[in-house]
Image (cartoon, rainbow, N blue to C red):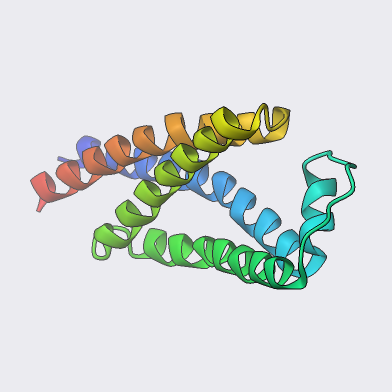
Length: 146
């Protein structure tokens, strides 16, 4: 039983490290958009095209980016108590996948979004489902040990 528990602990540590690394995306992009506005986000994504948007859209963009930032502390909290609020983490990961679907729709409708957005799209559509499966595996192993 000790070896199984140690293996689970190592795997849980690896899972947490991967998720924390991925949390840099909503933390950095969310704060950049919230306080740097659309121009700050454009610089982050390597775009220098002039951006003309109404103040209403700019204001809402900042609020949406602040909401995007909220994923970082929510996921960090759910990792700290990973087996109890498992639903919260799973919902956030599923929403990350949904964001990838929205980003893919944008690509199809508006054209190639650039290398950074494509890399994030890959994480959203590929990484989020893998993390959901991995999280489920960890939960099943933890329940089997109880």
